Amino acid sequence: MGAVEEGGKVATNIVAALSGQPIVLALVVFNCLLMGGVIYGTRENRMSFERTLSKLIDDQHELSKLLYQCTPSGNKTGLHWDLLSNPFIKR
Image (cartoon, rainbow, N blue to C red):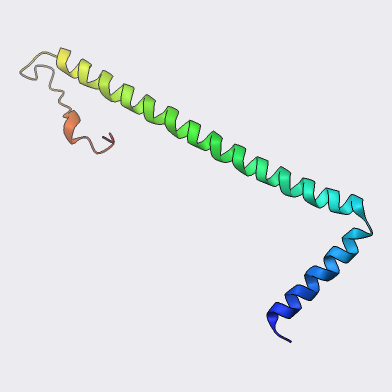
């Protein structure tokens, strides 16, 4: 027998066993739905977190630009931070 026939035989045996125990079938279906819901919720939560974090980083970048423009020219403080060459800010 090939793998397809063996797989079909296993599936038939599982369905036959579960038809005698409807509560087990209900639990299997419920567990599959629960896992799908948890996976979907986790994915949506992660995407929401990434959007929020991206907005926060963009706001910080704009704030840094504004603050940089407010510093006196000539670098009197000895502090220089070129925002355009900063590797930590994603554009």
